[in-house]
Structures are given as structure tokens and as C-alpha cells.
Image (tube, rainbow, N blue to C red; front, side):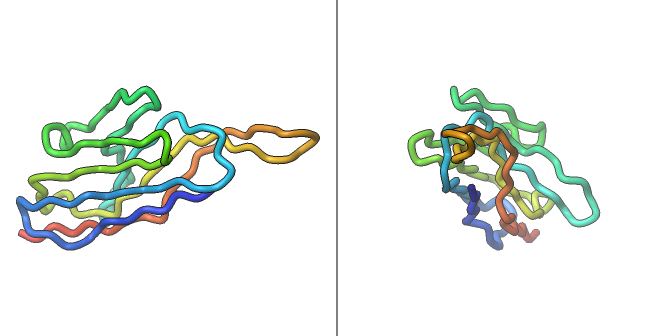
Length: 125
């Protein structure tokens, strides 16, 4: 199973970016999906999360500016970021709690946490 993120870049303060992340592989199902970010010298933090029933949680800095969404058929999660600020500059990581199937004694399931490779978002002032 892999998570592939895309959509980062450089944008001016007040601008917008959209991050996307696609899960691929022998996926049986995905429960929670999320975006985290890590700024230089800081710990990784949760930005937004979404369950498979589309319930969402945002951190305080993202509320009102960012929107997380997902497509349960395509196994994708996206983050629309509006009114970006220099303090949003970070590497953004997508996350998924994924149940994969594999051939063990029979067809078996494994529940694991998966992370994408990170997408750099830079907001200039």
C-alpha cells in the first residue's frame, strides 16, 4: 500500500493551494484519513482529519481557511487551502488508517498506519 501526495508549491500570502493524496495497493478499506504538517524546527501537527463517514476535525489555525475532503471510491483525500499565510509554510503529509488484504493462511486483513512522502508548501509574505 502506498500514499502518493501531490499539489504543493510556492504561493503568495492570501493565495490558495490544493493538496491531493491517492492510496493504492491491496486496500480492503480506509477508516481515518488526514493531513499533518511539519514546519522547520517544529513537531509534526495535525491539520485536518476526515472519517470514512465524512466527519471532519480541523486544528484551530485551519478552521475557516482549509477544507478536507475524500473520495471513498477512488481512495483519495484532498486539502483545499485558502487565504494561506507564511506560518502555513511546512511539509504536508497525508495519512491513512488502512486495512489491506494479503494472502496468509487464507485471505487475511491487516490494519496499519500509512504516510505519504510529503508535499512542500511555501507561502511568501
